[in-house]
Image 1: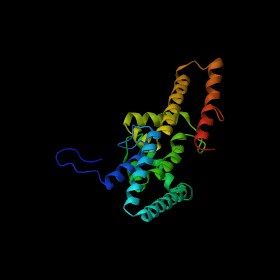
Image 2: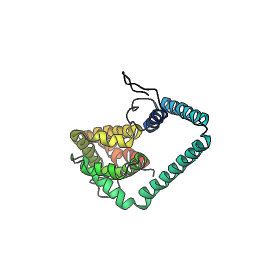
Image 3: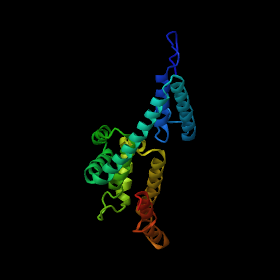
Length: 229
């Protein structure tokens, strides 16, 4: 926690607080410098550092201020949750439309709108909600029915992200678990598309592929489950 070298100084309360906050941000968010650490270990270290800070505050006769600061933090989290609901629900038409367009443009190599979205929504928690909600535009791209999963459009979008090198930008915002689900869905969808385009469409094969990609089929159920419906 302290700098190394001839000019090194003793660890300070501020440095301890900085490390603790970085650990808190790294839990489940894959953020530097703890993005490669396990969430469980980070949570344990975070709790230990918080306990150390509290002891320092109490020993310095500032127990009351420490408790007040903790209460303010809880209030801030509550307000963030309320703001999340406001952005994702009440302002869905405006926010999600911009986010959806930004996601589609990423597949074309245009990251300007997505970077603007990141700047306009500084809270990573709220931004993750907005991006996840707006994925429906990528899932339904090219569909004749609103918000219906469209396999060719989804595959083209994912391939565009890979080709343009913008896929990591999306995955970083979604988090490790959702990003893994997205990759798996692409793998399955791409395989189904190849089977449809490269195989003789007769007999059991065409029946299986048709059912797999049909309304209420496997991919449609996965898509609707991801949307929470």
